[in-house]
Amino acid sequence: MSACLKLGLKDFHIHDLRHVFASKMVMNGTSLYITGELLGHKTPNMTKRYSHLIPETLKKAVDEAFKKK
Image 1 (cartoon, rainbow, N blue to C red):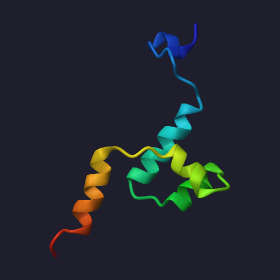
Image 2 (image 1 turned 180 degrees about the vertical axis):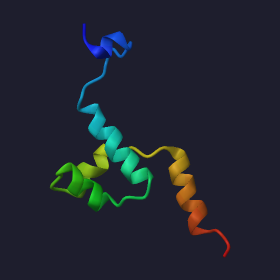
Image 3 (image 1 turned 90 degrees about the horizontal axis):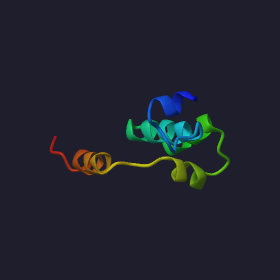
């Protein structure tokens, strides 16, 4: 029995970890260019497909852009 089944993960693939890595990198402020380089992507569009932003990250970016100094 695989480790994923033991943990109750029915639709998990090792490739999913690349998506998590890309998403975490971008949500923590790493540029798409650097993230793409780390993943070995040839185009920014591929990196964008891998990095899934959560709404809170998008809101934080807007808040930071318009915060008073």
